[in-house]
Length: 308
Image (cartoon, rainbow, N blue to C red; front, top):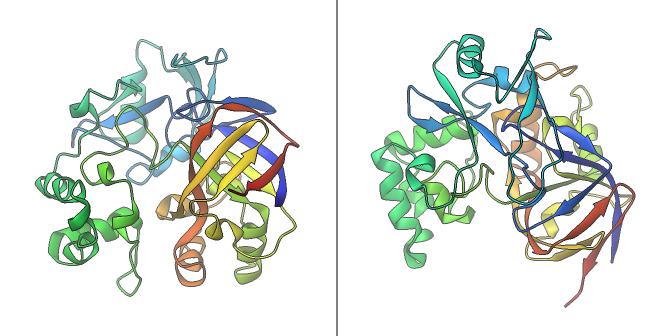
């Protein structure tokens, strides 16, 4: 079944900073090479952090100095909101990021998956929920357990939910995210590829015409131009997509958080974006996917649902 065509390809050298548009890319087991190759660690908490805690990161931009290949994470050039320049390999990069954000932070390349302490959440609750999530029979109980006390408050803070709004079903997330800030060995929020369609953006624009439904708010790897109607990505769970010569498997809809509301270059802060997604799109916009078959994807390539 034909879905549409690839309109935009995005790679994000530094987690939560603006990314770079590509005309083509390879897709490997960890997605686009060196996507989210760098991330900041909050030295106050000792955890890898993102634009939820430091919204100003989303007004920064990053671009690789050389084309990544395989597991290589090359240096990236950075532009701060005031237009000043630096780079991931600058001797004073940690001092400059700390001055920008007002709290001590350090910049880290992606580390191997067996370096679990680098990715581990520091709270005791995270360790408890992590153990429960690893037991399939107990995973369905996670939403109930997270609906009380500090766990509920932390979950609402994580997803920027108002008191009267629902929170995502955390039992659908990869179980390692209960214990770690990202799947170890990556800085992804959940899976290696994120897909979004123009069909969904058009629906949201009709629901909230005063907001700017720019794809940059949602940080997809692939923006798909489609004439189909509705929030079509929400129907793709466990479906396989042929994109160029790559095959992806859609995993779960993308539950949205406050990242979508923060200011970016040419985009003002707008809390109504998230309120509309929570109310009218069952909290989700776009879909996460994993890589089944590596390949090459170019702007203009066809996107097809594979049967069987």
